[in-house]
Amino acid sequence: MVKAAELPEEQVSDLATIFQALGDTTRVRIIHALVQSEMCVCDLAAVLGMTQSAISHQLRTLRNLRIIKRRKEGRVAYYSIDDHHILTLFNTGLEHVSHR
Figure 1 (tube, rainbow, N blue to C red):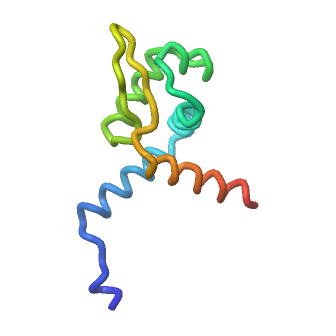
Figure 2 (cartoon, rainbow, N blue to C red):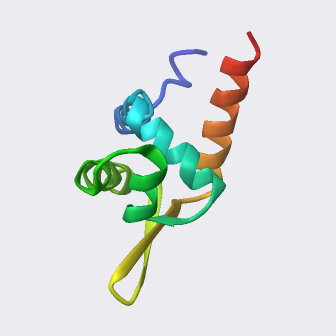
């Protein structure tokens, strides 16, 4: 019965990649900030005390994994959580570590 319910390899790989992305402290801090509010790179850099270059590098990774999305307004890009699944995953993980 367990063998019949085995996940396809592509799903296993995609899920592992998402958890790997969430395993980086900088990306967790970025996601937490974006859970609070949509932000541009300069705002994230100011809030997290990091360079815009470092933030942009992490945002690219998160966007490629569809964890966050980008909305452009003129020359400024604003970032937010991609969908409610990511929000649920993040909040569930946060609740778990707070439960100790």
